[in-house]
Length: 465
Image (cartoon, rainbow, N blue to C red; front, side, top):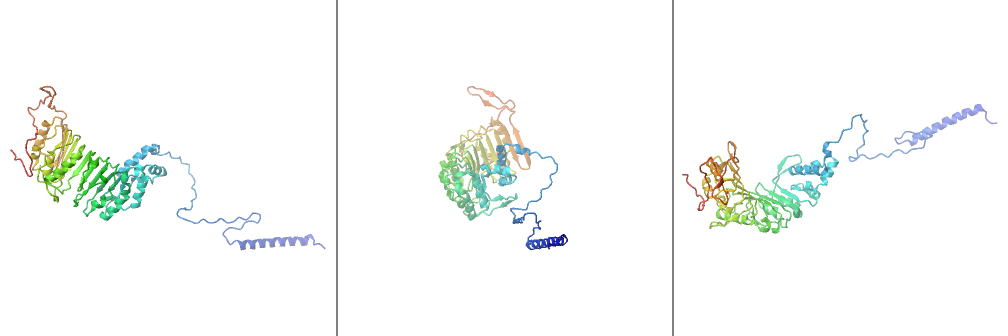
């Protein structure tokens, strides 16, 4: 007999409750993971695979609700053309070696501009950061390089620290730049502390031609190596500016014939007539100079054989417009006084008389110097410093130099004085006539510093009248 409806209802109720208990037990058994139980009427979903944490992939933060603030406009500097912005970067790189690195870390656009401007990376200041300098040379591509090896260097924090330069470190640093010698635009090597064989370590690799080299500076006042160096296989046709101090160079026409600027400090291995002969030989090769600076430092002992005969060969510098005569001792050296009498400068317009020791009194040989050296009549600007100054010079120069425009006087414990000669009437002979175009109306006569027919000897002085 089939069960009635009364007995069927308890059975259904018992079956449903049993099914629920089994489903709960199965869910609790299989829910060892952290996923919550799902209803039976929904399909089963696998739990997500956890991603490993790392520094390069930090966990994304929840986006903050955007406030109803106005959207800021772009900075006006973003409106500059890329060429102007790159030019500004180049100007900053000339003042700060690490400036290209600084601007390349500002934003993405500036970094792209910096990486696509090879001239921004051309300045290479050699130091212990070998990997950085090699990377900068790579970023410069085929752009001409400016190589520097200085006694001190700037750090990225803006602190200037001295470098420990010895023959081993100098040779190591220079090997970074030697493979790119054909790309050199300038080379600046300076040493301030003594260490043997520094020039040999620095210039040993400079045996290849440097076709693009434009400027060269070699400064080491404490050098005691008398070796004469031949640079760049005697071929640097683009060289125009040269600064030498404390080094002997083989003065070849293929190296130095095209110079327009020469800052020459005598090495001191020769003195007297031999030193004068050496410099006249140099000037005869570099006869296209426009600016010349001369210095004979004191306190050095000559090591090479002297020359007994006096130098009489004259040198013509037809393009010279600026002449700097410098003294760092208590008196004018014989070599400088004798040398200026052998140089012909028909176009010089600027004369600077520099006293590096800033003496409070006039040089003892000042009068005898101007007694043998005739001031060029083409002078327009004269600068007189410290020991070169004599109050009687101003009056004599103002009347003997017809084209003189300004005299600048520098003295210790006194403000600089500038004498402008623009308003005065100068006496200038007129061509093809007996008279003059203009005549000085305020002075009855004028003084002229002329060259007498005498020879200048060491220690020769003219007594005061």
